[in-house]
Length: 279
Image (cartoon, rainbow, N blue to C red; front, side, top):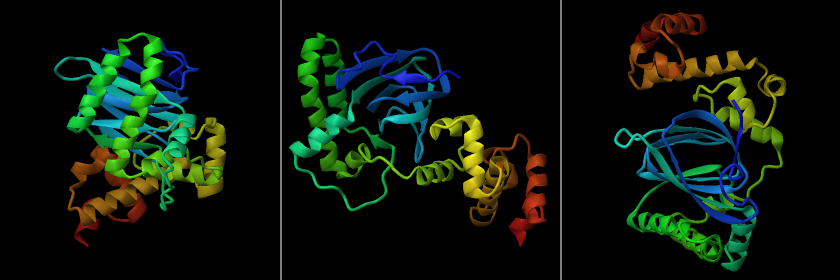
């Protein structure tokens, strides 16, 4: 699948540090490889969206929106059942704008050491009005947009800091210099997401062959065996602690039919799922 680079491949000037784009489509996409060259607010309006990043993943409907750090991700977009359209308002902004904002308002870095590449946030009345104002701004000339959008950027950031704190803000400028740590984090964060090796390789910005070599170096196991073991361990947890039936979970674990799941479970644990559940 060809990688889409945003916002470069949209009808916007990529050299402008803050831009707004109204996106509308009547075609669904499934795990599209996307390279975000700027941080992005994705204000979902119609349809649903699913994203996978190196250390976080979300599935949202139009009661929520996403804040996404620049970098590699996989995107799925599904149409609304009512309108048969997917619609969102995208607000792109550079890392430099985040740094300027932090300096201007003299913000202090949080104590947390855990930063994420994407955040899901619920709409409220204020943010809904904010998005409507972006729609109005998108209809203005580019000159006026360029004058207004820096103020709108400050507005949404100040509001979210008041509501959420500053963790999300600093995640946008946090770069991991430890590539090994980032690789391990990407794998462990997507253990149960049923991504292909090609998709995981994209998230780590590696070729499939390089990904396999690094995987065996870090986890001392071929990727296919490691992911199989982790998913079966998760199945055992669901059977024992959540009282789930084998027929309820085999698809969630990644098996096409129940008999294959039972056979794989018996091979790993020495008993069938029902026997494991009753011990």
